[in-house]
Length: 215
Picture 1 (cartoon, rainbow, N blue to C red):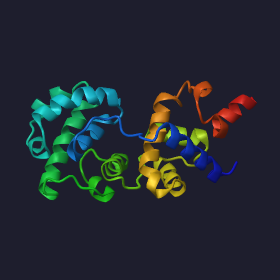
Picture 2: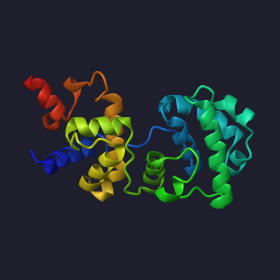
Picture 3: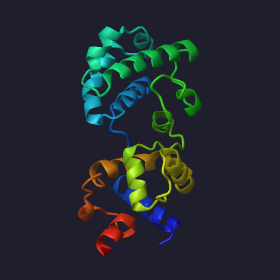
């Protein structure tokens, strides 16, 4: 099977079985999504979704967050991983948005990565989810699943290397959605330690599964 054939199978499968795939983080606007994504680093979306309502009730917009006091914000996110750093990041992010972007969340990767707590993965999430830009956020799920299936070579050893291969091979109009396909597949089916191969619908094209049954 060629790489193009494998990609086409994956596209056809997920367009049929997950046509409305989207982020599982709860948000109403770009500010809320940015806060949620910053908090989600090394933390589950479920935990973030339990935490953000109280944050947004106290700090409903970027202006109010920019004026937040560390000791008042910290208790609201102390159940999240790395709460000390993330508290600092949220306040710093908001202050920079107010001071340098007139209170509007920027919508380019280059601008977003200038904000405290925002790396390339986070910037790709924001721009692809909010603006449907053809950007591919590579988290641990995307990294693992894309290599297991055979969408990217094993030699792609960094998130950026994986990102470049995926962007090159998925149609531009589907990149923002393919990001969610791979994340959700990794979250619920292609688990890190015990992948649910018997119930997986893409066994036919999965290199990991084909090697497994050949053993």
